[in-house]
Amino acid sequence: MKWVWIILILLIVFALEELYRYIFCKKSSVICEKLFDSKGHCEDYYTYHSAQNKRMWQLPYEEFTMLSQRGEQLKGFYYPCGAQGKKIAFVVHGYRSNHVDTGSICYDYYASRGIDVFACDHTAAGDSAGHFIGFDVLESQDCLKWLDFLREKFGEDVQIILHGFSMGAATVMQMSSHCPENVKFIVEDSGYWCAKAAMAHQVGPMYGPLRLINRLVAGYDWNASDVTQSLKNSKLPILFVHGQDDKLVPFENGPKLYESYQGEKDCFFPENTRHIESMYTSPQAYGEKLDRFVEKYIQ
Image 1 (cartoon, helix red, strand yellow):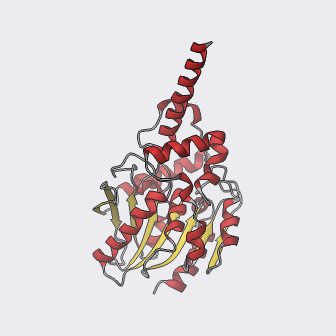
Image 2 (spheres, one colour):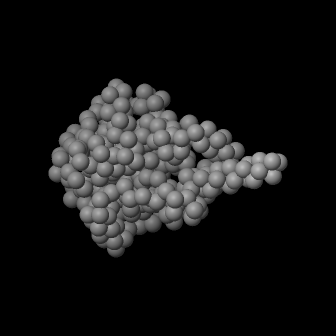
Image 3 (cartoon, rainbow, N blue to C red):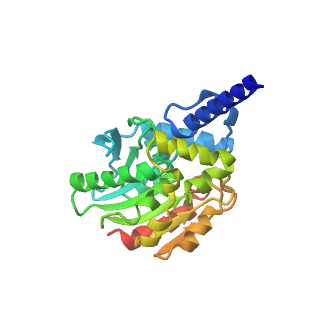
């Protein structure tokens, strides 16, 4: 009986370690990837998005580097689109994504309006260093530093749009009460209220143990991803976007965030749209919403 308990404990420890690596670490768990691998989009979207990514990789860009507060080297990528660095859309990517994978979603919109695009690889993503994904806690700290970098690089008169997707949407909301005046408005697309709201339904009772492990290993609290206080203190105009068929970050997050926000705001909640697909399923309507913000807040 003793050996049965020892084996059971070892299996639980092994499962927690693999699950932690799968959720938090740049070097993921191969076992969990096979167990939990599921496609969240239709095949047409994957074909379209793959073509957009391939095209963006071929665009001219300028690469920047910066050290995070944790001493990690981070990479940023600037795509000139005619604004000479005076109008920049800072596109913030999501969970296990990179600057091209997310930047390609809205690059055409901003390029067609003559607005330059900047996108970074977060800690533990793309070409940036780091071992642990920060669920907007670490990423928001880094992106605030990138805002300082852009001001130093392009001048104090640079006008910036923050446009985040998924975890990147939570990141820009987390930043919303700490942004310099250069940030004129925010777009949060498919964001979550907090990591618990986004992940608890997926990890269930494992949330508590995983949160504790992460505090010990990565040094931050998973619950700190809650954007409530930042939105409460924010004065920036925000466009809230969320597809009604989003299963990855449940659609209920979108209306809840929109209704709770007391600042200037608008929303776009298209039907028959899954996670971060709104620009794909409804490009014209999405573009019209963005145009109103650009015309009102960007000089």
